[in-house]
Structure formats: C-alpha cells, structure tokens
Length: 291
Image (cartoon, rainbow, N blue to C red; front, side, top):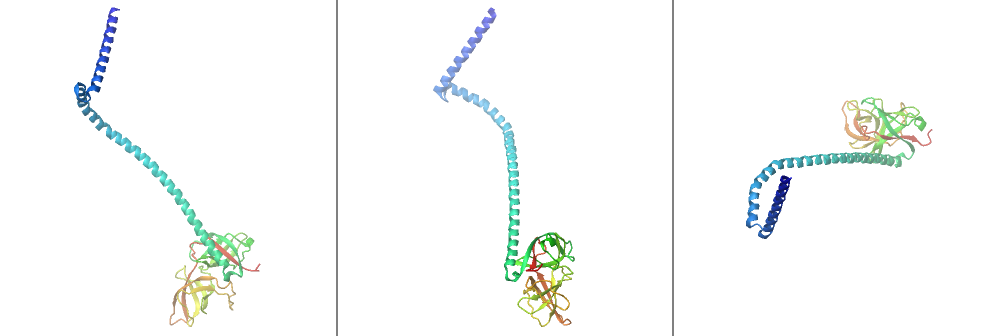
C-alpha cells in the first residue's frame, strides 16, 4: 500500500511540475514574442518539423491533386452528358418546328392555288400521300381518299410549288378509301399543254432519257417558244383523245428548245414545277357540279 501511495504522489508531483512549466512558457511567450527563450525554442522546433512537413506535403499533394482532378472530371462528364441531353431535346424541338413550318408553307401554297382565278371553277378534296412507286418508269402514288370521298378516275391532282400548286398527275384507279394517281412522269402519261403567252400547243410525255423531265411533242417549227416560258394544261378536244384535265394548271417551264433539219417539229424539254421527291399533301380537283 505504501508503494502505491508513493507512486501516486510522484505522478501528481510530475503533473504539477509540467503544468507549472507550461504556464511559465506561455507567460514568457506572450511577454517576449518571437524573441527570448520561448522564441528560440519555437524556432528550433520549426527547424526540425519544417522538413518533415515539406516531405509530407510533397507526398500528399499529388494525391490531393489527383483526387481534385478526378472529382472535377466526373463533374465535367456529368455536365457534358446533361448538355448533350439538352441539345438533343432542343434539336428534336427544332426539327419539329421546321417540319411544322414546311407543312404550313405547303398548306399556304395549296390555299393560294384554291383562291386563284384559274381554280375558281373547281372544288377540291385534300389528301395525303400514303405510298409511292419504287421506280422511275412506273410512277404512281397512293392517296388516302377514294370513291367514298367523291374521288373518280381521271380527276386531276395538284401538289404545292412556288406560290401555288402544279399538276402532278391524274387519278388512275379508285377504291372506297384510297386512290392510285398516275404521275405525269409515268411512261404511260400524256398531257395536252400549251405555252403560256403563245399559241404553241403539244403533248407532254416523259423523256425517255431522263425520267425527271418531260418532252413536248408536235410543236410546229413556226411556233415561237423560248426557254423559261411556263407550260400549262390545255383543255381542248382532239379527234383521237378526249380532254382529261382542266386548262391553265401550271405544269412546268421550258428548259431547252431545239430543232433538226430532218424533223418538222421542235424538240422542247420541260422541267416540272412539282418536286416529286417531296410529295406529302395534294389536292384532287373536282369540276363544280360534277357527281
């Protein structure tokens, strides 16, 4: 028991001495500042610990930098993904807006045609293209209206172009809810036409060399035809063919005129107004009063 008490007394004495020394050092530190004994002690301690701190800093700094770079990279990737998604959403919205603008433009073109003086004698039925022939020689489309809507064989069909509409074909066959339209580029198509501003008339047929062009046949050498003139449908009777189309529907424009010495007719090439690669909405024309 005596030994235990002596140890306890020694511990208390040591703790008391340490506390007294600490208070003495603190008092001297405040009084002396960086000078004096305590300042010397701090400087000595700093000279010992500074190299160690520098080593620790050099070891840990790359780890800290790597951690910061990795965290920043992850954040940058997340922000990049968010930006990509936002751009995709904006891009999709832009495509939809552009499609709506194109649709509105086509509707305005068809409306302008309907309100024009040349179309005043005709009613019309709006239709959408639901199928298109796959080759350049049998050129037909299918529209989503038929006999139940009042569609009949040989009804003319127009599509948007410029500030109005142009002839694209005529109804070839009809079911209750759909109709097949033969395009003017089909090899079986033939359209009577006239040159706007002149007296020349002829038969428009697809070009054998270029399925996107038309040739105007049976135009006499004495007829005056110039490049750039518009070509319109001509409604007149023939001994061989009955008229199928109303007059003055725009068809195309003259792109070349030639004549050979051996031929008594001019060779006239016509480029259609309608873009046959972009057929979506059309009008089927009906003569007013026709059943």
